[in-house]
Length: 470
Image (tube, rainbow, N blue to C red; front, side, top):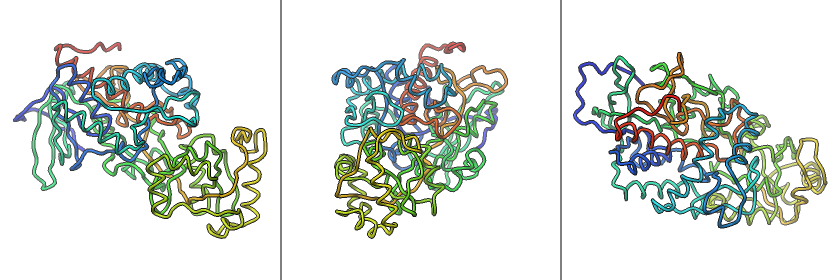
């Protein structure tokens, strides 16, 4: 990824708002900018926009939405921001947390009412760290459906997407203002596109093994469950422009990806009574602490694989998720009427597995810190699925202000016309893997994408600069 001088470069076309990345962040940034009257172009390296969004569960936490109000859920910016900072050990930038929470409900309702992108409030269980029901998902509950809905909204708005367009060079003037980009096509041909503002919505560096090993060594050998195109382009470009980065050691992991199938198994199974056991049939952690940090716990077990163990009630809950149904169709889900039979099917020590399952009928806090009274004993028939820990996406990135403008490392002033959101910018999970609160990734993709699009549009439509103090 290169940054070159724009001196002597002529751009055949110039667009007011140029967006690199056609995932959720880029799509929402485009819609927000378009709604304010700015001409927008999205550059997408793939043949079809998908990004890491399509690989996710498609759930976005938000407060104060019409969906919450319809269900009489009492939530607020204060409650949501407290949940985020509690999980992050207070390490997240409070100004960013505040603006993200304030924007969250607005974006969900705006997409629903203005762009016909429908959601549902996920009910029946709370994800780790959330004090109220605030997860919003597309009707079928998949990331692919979410991407399909956003793509439809962008298409209906008449926003252009240039696909098979891999951005390889940024061109800047002496003031570090981005004047345009070079894209490379699959056949090797190159094109130049000028811009008045540039939004980096190309996620983080999860697909760059060298960067992961450098910044997050504990996840260096983890399965990567994100988009392979997430090579850290935004961070690399930003650093070459003198931009600041923050919390580069943060990421979202997940301790429950079916292996060898590579299918995400919802953590709702753990929250509603399930447990994880290693090859010795023994529990090894608090499954209710959080699915992100559980990735490391799982990877530390023999072979980096464990078994999710649960019962019929959890299985029926799992069947409400497309991914889980897919896993069942592929034979990943095992079942038996007795613990002994289940142990034989999954090749685990019978007595150890029996002890692990029966201890869940206890009360109070166990030695791992899990409150056993919240779920109770498992009942036959029993179910199991073999899983591993995975890296989903990175949470560290370019430091931004509350207008999603990228900040210079030396003076903390905004770069002239560069914006970032989602995984390209620093998230709200603090500096550690355990700081990730369920949904933080899509939350910042939605909210910071919206803010970036709005801010960029205001810069070009009003021909003025968003206040550096914001």
